[in-house]
Length: 329
Image (cartoon, rainbow, N blue to C red; front, side, top):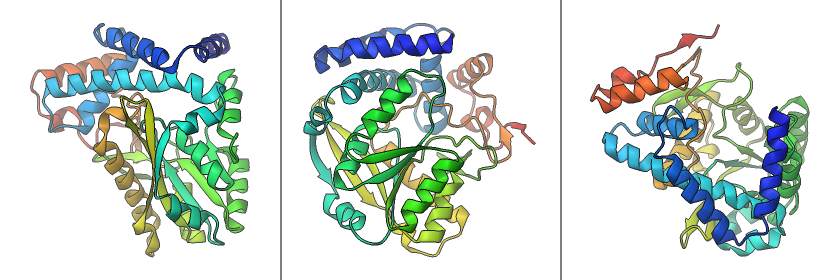
């Protein structure tokens, strides 16, 4: 069944690539806006977005978070629909919509030096565009989580590799390729905001809550002493154009243990999200796992109850306690 759905998605994406980009985004945004007015029990994506907003922004009122969740739903739909053009049309079209690459000289000098480079990315704004920019600068190994038996996955992989990047899976083989690249002064990139697959990964705080994070990042930083950059996109002109930003992670220059590296990494990602929160993809169940326990916040009945309690005025700390969860040991 899942495989049939993936082929249907591929057919939809293949159709959308022939429509004007403004129309594709408008259609997706309008459908998402309409869906956001349906009951939360019906639209799981909106429920997850709102729940994440309530977790991360306790200083906002219920109405503020409700409006923010609706805006984020619309923007995420527009972004995802736009990837029909990013993935299936010539990469030159997507790159032509990049107005400015901030930090270009700094990251270019680093990538062309003998010192290895680690680039940390996240699902912010048009997150598929920076990988095309990276490949234009110099070859890089990019780690990702393949979607098994998904017809869209080979299309996405091919699209991301068109300008010179090599995508490797987040498994033993991918780790080996990444380590070899770094050992020879190459560049390694990873979507660092994703929940890693292995449950043995360490944790760090994200918006005040411990979550599992990719411990591999800390290991390569400790071993290879690379230059470390964050990369992300920001929208311009009603999201029709982008700026791409390479921000040097100054904290990586120090002698830090694993816990400190991972906490600095997550703090940097959080800062990027807080600057433009409506442009982040809030649909992920990012707070599902803590340091040594699993939270049940995203299960439908539980999520609806948590949302109801916040709407009723119950204190945030009692609805979303930092240590709440079920042991996974």
